[in-house]
Image (cartoon, rainbow, N blue to C red; front, side, top):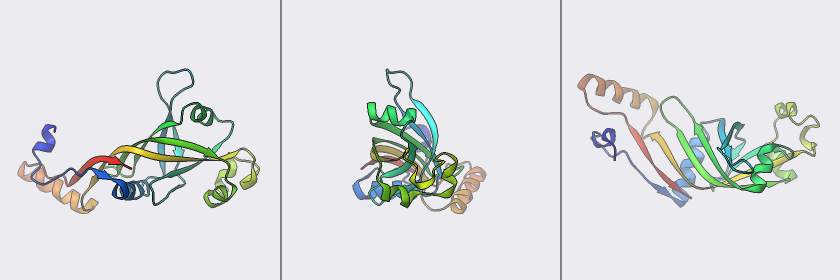
Length: 178
């Protein structure tokens, strides 16, 4: 543990597995509308990172996105389905890093479920645009940083810590294993 964690007067770590991990993923992704979606480039090199609008997270922790079948992202996933996602829900908490496997489908029912008229900017033929695909990311592992209570209590603890010179940040963090 690093020094900031050793200075905490209360427990600030909770590693989560299975259903508890999926529940935390759903909670934290619900606070973040977008994420950084990272794929490995074909032929190797540094990760390719782009912002993506998260459309849904299901009860199992699977995250859903809409993408174009002719995008570099879809080509990279087809070559290597290993992806990383980074999300931030607020200034002081709700941080999430996930590693998982992506699958691509043309499930019309799921496309209709995730569709929003604003997407017509990218899919000019609307919900029936033949280029639309669904990317489902099935998390395998990750790491989260959150608050134990809420932002107001976290702020009060930070102010009290500042006044007393103690570490009282109300944080909780840990690994996720789905």
